[in-house]
Image (cartoon, rainbow, N blue to C red; front, side, top):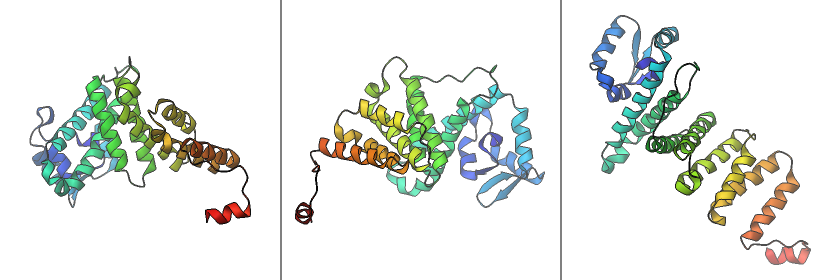
Amino acid sequence: LLSCIGTRVNQIIVDMIDGLNGITGLVSSIDVLVEEGLLEKEGSFIKFRHDSIMQAVHDFTPESNISRLHLDIGSKIIAQVTSFPSDNHDVYKDLVDEALIVAADQINLSREKKDSAVPRVEFSPKQCITFAKINLKSAHKAGPDIDRALRNLKFGLSFLRDASKTINYWKEHYNLSLSLSEEYAHAMFKGGDSSEIIECVNEIIDNARCLEDSCKAYEVLILALYSSGKKLMAVDQALTILRKLNYPFPSQVDRQLTTDAM
């Protein structure tokens, strides 16, 4: 179980997954492994003494089992977090933040396949929506780690699309679609990845229910155009959206107009 999470894991996360798939006494088992020198404790964290030990354990487990373990670990953490008292949210904030990040990573890892012969883990539409929301929350908690945010948002959109294979997911889950797409476009711009920005922005503009819902997308588009050296196109785009918002700029600006505006 620990090898699925990584080289270092918070003791509280270990407590959360104790009992998973009938595996009990995880804490006492860890104490034995610490005595044997395979694991070590570092404050409130438990870590493998060497990365190679973790990798050896991970590689020894069949990929089909690994994918299922990732899913089970992530699902159990989500269930534990949602059981926390809502009136004490501030007390559990740091724990919830860390747990959601770990849960999102586990769910996403269950979706990745290295061996094409191993069947892909299938998710119900309800699971897909839950996991899309978890990835969105995890992206919000990524802070300055743009790569993590991008990964979460990309997986979030993937889960969202899988939940609505027969129906336009924008129609079925509009607010979630808008939030994930806006955040993804913004994260791509911040991370310097312009490969999908235009496509993502156009999707938002095409599906936005009102002009106000597309403003963030236009903002990212203008910033992306300007930063790529297409400054005139950026200005034209800015003037276009201002006109749509009923804030038209005059085509000619003279000294008197500037003075009046000031």
